[in-house]
Length: 141
Image (cartoon, rainbow, N blue to C red):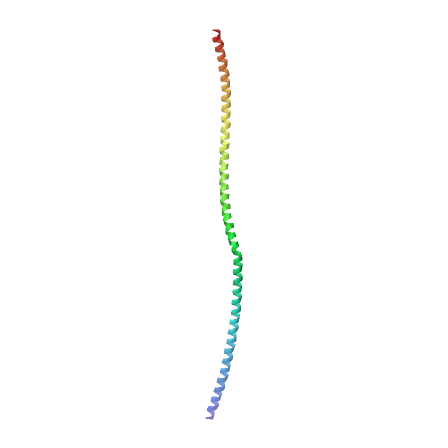
């Protein structure tokens, strides 16, 4: 009986020791979990603050988005004007060539008209002279 009591006492001591160790382990785990939770809460607060700052910056950048869209619109408009200007320069160049051709034809026509006028004056002078000859001939007869 006595040996059983000793064995029971040893088992109780072991149980107390194991209970104490487990309680100590549980307390350590609870402290570690509390530390992790605290760190997680700090990180969450930091991330929330970063998010708030990012949203503030995004709000500050929103007017720039409108300006960027306006700039893109102006670039597109500028490109269209550039193309139109290129087309206009091409048309002007074509008109210049046509004008040069028309001017050359005009000069040729002027030369022809001058020759015609010169010839016409000469013919007219000749006709006047012939008319005077005929008048004087008719007048003599």
